[in-house]
Every structure is written in C-alpha cells, then in structure tokens.
Image (cartoon, rainbow, N blue to C red; front, top):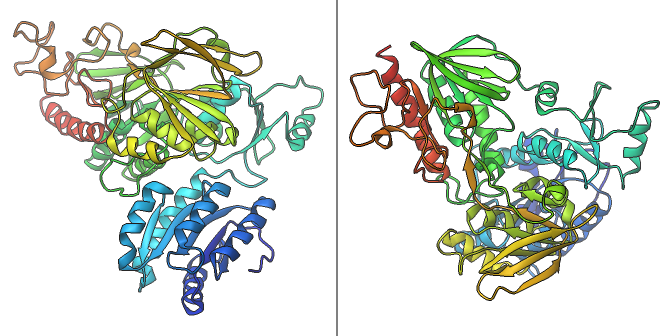
Length: 557
C-alpha cells in the first residue's frame, strides 16, 4: 500500500481479488477523490499494517470498505482489530448473499455501520447514497484539522467540559487542546500576552477569541441564531428534543410560521444517546447527535427557525401566547408547544459537587469518552441511556463497570442492549448496588459502592463516573400558569379533569385536546408530559399529533 501525500481524510478499500479491488477503487475515485484520499489493500494483514502506520502519523480515516471473504483474515476479523485503533471510523462490510447472517451479527459485535452485497451496479443508486450518508455523519463528529475552531482548556475543568459538550452536541467541529499536555495550547495562550491566562479559551479562524463564554455568546459566534427574526409567530415551540423538532418539521411544512427555542444544544435527552438501536428505519442504529442533526436540517429546509436562547417564562393574554427570553425579549404567537423535556436527575452523594464536570459527568459519554482511553470508568444507572453510554465508553475505556440498584436489568433496559452488554468483554455489572461517595482532589480518585442487601460498602479506584439515573421535568418556565402533577410533569387532555370537571379557568365549550394543557392554545409533547412513554418514537409521534391539534385550535381563534 502506497501512502503518498495525504492531507485529506482517508477511505480504505480492502479486497483480495485484484479485479474487484480495482473496480471498488475506481468507483470510489470517481465520486470521492476531491474530498478524500482513496487507499487500497489486497489483504487484511496489509491493511492492518497500513492502519497502524496511519495511526502513528495521526492521520484521519473516514471509512473502511472491506470484503468479508478473504483468506487468513476475514473482513470482520480485520474490522475487529481496526476499530480499536480508529473507533470513530465508519465500517462497511462487503458481502455475498450467503454472508448476510454474519453481517447482521456483526452489527452488534463490532458496531458495523452498514453491509453491502456485491455487485452494486449502478453505484449511483446502490453505493454512493449509502456512503454519502455515512461520510456526512463522520465529518460532522470528527474534529477539524488545524485552522478551524480550537478550544484550549484542561480535562479537569468543569467549564471546559460544558463548552466541549455544547459543541459536540451541536455538531460544531472543533479541535481540543489540553493545556496540560499540548505544546500548541500553551503557544496559543501566549498570544494573549499581557492578559491573565484564563480557560477555556476558544480560538477562531478569523483570529478572534472567546474566553469562558456563556452558551448564548458562543452560539452566536459559531453561526447559530440567538435572536428571533420576527416578533410574532403562528407556532412557538419551547424545547428542541425529538418532540419539538418533529413539531417544527410538521408545522413548517404545513405553512405555519414556526419558531423553535432551545436553551442549550438541540436533541434533548435523546441527543446525548451514543446509539439508538430501536428507532424504526435505522437497522444499524443511529446516534442521538446524528438523529438530531438530520432533524434540524429537515426543519430548517422546510422553513422553521431555530433559536438558541433561554426562556424565562410564558404567559397568556387573550388569544395570544407570549414567551419571555432571558435577554429581555418577548415573543408572541397564536399557539405554544412546550416540549422542554427532562433534565438529568442529580446524584446526592458525598463529594460529588466539586467533581461534577471534572471526571464526574451526567451523561456526556459521547463528548468525554475519548479522554478515558485505556482507563477504568463507572456508569451509574440501569435504563437504556446507561446501557448505551456503557457500550459507547467500552470502545475507549479498558474497563467499564455498570452499577445499578435493581437485582437485574430486565425491568428497565431493552433486551437487545442487555445482550450487547453481556457480549462485551470489557463491561462488567454490579447489581443491587448504589454509589454513596466520590473522592478526589483535582480529579476523581475513588468511589464508594454499597450493596443494598448486605449493607457492605467498599471503596474502588476509578478514573471517571458517568451518571444516568433518570430525569426530572423541565417545567420551571411555566410557573403557576400550567397545571402539573405532584412530580411537576405537565398534565394534558384527560389528565386535567378533577372529579369529572374541566380544569379551573377553562373558557371554551369543548374539552381540552389530548395534548392540550389547562390553558387553551398551549400544548405539551414529549417527556415533559405526565405519563409520557420515554421513547424517541413516542416523542416523535406526539410532536406530529400536537401540530394536528394545533391546526384544529387555530381554526377556532
């Protein structure tokens, strides 16, 4: 394999049949040679040697396209080795019809992204659309080369973590430079001579910098909208999780002037999922970030406006609904949809506050996992989000320990995920166990685990803890205006009736619609609703239904 001069991301094609390999390389060159370096290998061994050399050179590999049936080393055997060196590279297996079962099994065993049956003529229909999608996803998550946005901070800084998490969840490419390890980081901060060295600091291609910015300032700098284009909309949606983004797609596509307001990064809880495998239409699974990116693109294309701002409060006045933002702006609309979702439930144990964002994280598996290559990490929680986090972390950490309170995972975690965890060698589980303390000065050093049956406690060394222990509704912006249950989830439709009576203050002759709150024209969808089923598909369905009900409401006002 010849390396040549490589200043582009690399696509590697591997097949032991020269004619087939030439045909693969020809098709790849025809479509991708302007953006990617196309490399080829005639065997798995040759490819492994090349991948190791590329790793030493710190060069980026975007995609492996490898034949399954090769002598001495099969395609899956090669990918099993290669993915350890390049865990973020997209994996595509070339198969014959007889290899279909093997390919499907590899989706779970090595997180295969796609399998293609040969031949694929014409490539314009059966090859390029698939690879285009995979390469687009890869580009959106890989740090850009030198010359783009650079973030200088320290791994042991909560502020650095929050900036990284925002950029990662927002699909904004950046280069992370650890001040304690990267010489370049120190040189960049030296450019700020005469100023107090403060971190995190962001350096932009235009020569400007931002020091410890708030999220709104950063969002504006990277090109996100932070100010609404209009003072008045048909539909304002608060919260850009799956429910809110779906409502934006349907609302905008059906002619409603639609605005979505999100206080942090779009995607909600689903957006933090490393891999969603039970959402229909994605047989290989999809990350929450990728699903969010596609939804945002779709909503914007159809005319929805997406705003990064924090909502202070909502109110109703006659036929109008108002949203007040933290910057003092007030926007009005005919109909309002609350899809604010849920916030991560905080863990109340000794020592956790000072280490949060500094080796103790709520979620954040996708943004922080790479920093714990070869380390031992603990995942706290027993639901799907914890399982997905553990699976993603297992691609980087040498050991992942999943700690949960119940006797088994069957009550709270999907079977497919339990099976994946059981098959993953570097994941172990601790049932009937809870965390009671974290200890460390600059960073996490030990955690204390307690067996809930015996009461026995033991301290364990740990490099990081990732917490997925449930969520609480984000309903603080509604104040006393919106009726909520005892756990502060929003009541809608039939749940509003007390003793068979309509909610207090209800002025219309009809009953509230199924997703309508106690205030006519204010709706709720997704995880923030009382009794909501916490699944992406459920939230998506509610977002679509909410728009249909909003149309019915608008017909009467």
